[in-house]
Image 1 (cartoon, rainbow, N blue to C red):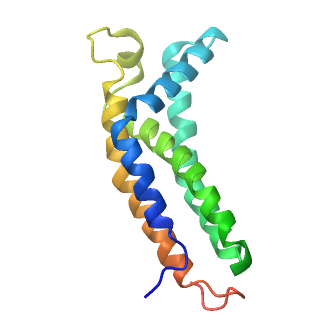
Image 2: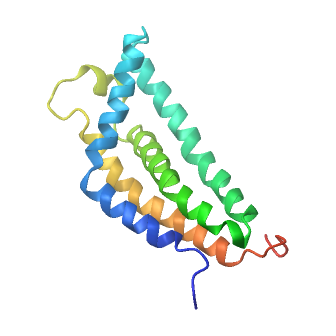
Length: 154
């Protein structure tokens, strides 16, 4: 059985990278939090806003990308494969930030200096990898069952 798209394979490569450099996206998230702070938004409010927006992105983005896969015809398969690493990065970062809300609160991240600040983001980055792989598997499954006219789709 051949794969119509090697989406899972691309995500596994992205996950290997994400396994070894989870701090990079944590730095991006804390940098964005600092930028919001420089704009006058209180740290805890900025963190809660980031959590809310990344949760919405993490929920909506797979559906948007799935629609992209369904609409893609055979002559455009390369576009889906080129967009997948971008999807993986955005979804990985969004899952990382939104999962952090389950393990800590905004006040702890902003005002407690116990030497652990940001470790939750690294932990949740690792937690987001299996979720990202499962989403990519679902994409692969849907793309295998895709027909040019979209007939037979659930």
